[in-house]
Image (cartoon, rainbow, N blue to C red; front, top):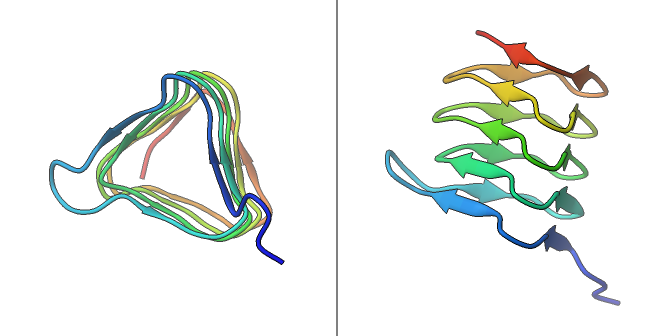
Length: 88
């Protein structure tokens, strides 16, 4: 049964400037989030108003808190919560 495998809420901005934006299964992206050439693995969560920059990777079951910024080429480890600014 296919039930909402990917949820991108209202006003999500997707910018594939330096490559594709890859979104896995069971991913939720909150409203007004910005995705820039990043990779969101299965079962990840990106909170409202957050930004995931170029080359960044959100691993499986990781959470990017609302309003957080994941900088370029940074990895949010599996099963972790990131908040504020996360640098690689």
